[in-house]
Image 1 (cartoon, helix red, strand yellow):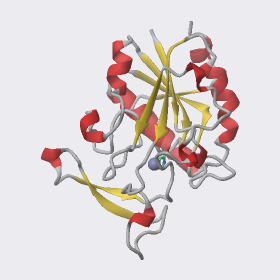
Image 2 (cartoon, rainbow, N blue to C red):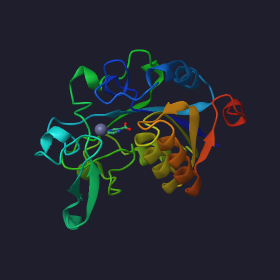
Image 3 (tube, helix red, strand yellow):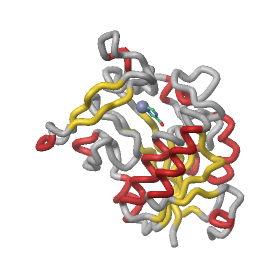
Image 4 (cartoon, rainbow, N blue to C red):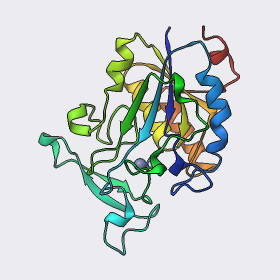
Length: 231
Ligand code: VGL
Ligand code: ZN
């Protein structure tokens, strides 16, 4: 077995006190995530960074009122793959967040990024959402289509990774979709429960755990045997 740690979106805009899409408790995850980053049992350490252009489709302000209230409204989004543009999905609208080259997109300084082997910048295509670090909302993985800077699946398989451990924010969005896509890609996938927080505290995590369990993703604790036994 070969383990990879994936630290999802630990960025200023997802953290109190000033983040535009702040997730309750997100900044307080840093010590737990740093001890995982320091664990010698991980062969590979990856971080993801939500990294949107100003015109991103998920930003409420890029759509006309009245149906542009963040968190509440959604719009129709088409598959950006050239042959699949008739395929559509509903996309939740968000406050403007993690805009490229703004301080809101920065990884918070509390996270020790010195050990990160790969930084995946995602969500760079203006017309499609990308919660997962592996693929966009339609499952496109080709960096040429999704405007991501790396193919995470190939990066991990090239290094012989068998198990993926996902931490960070948000538990009910980017962490969930990254863990689900890891399982879909054939890795054993784990989410470290005490190293994640949700946009919707309480019910968000409850629904997420059910989805993860149904997909065969295991939910573990940072002080549990799965981490302790990594060598
Ligand atoms: C995320 C909403 C919008 C996340 C990213 O990191 O979970 N959530 N963009
Ligand atoms: Zn985003």
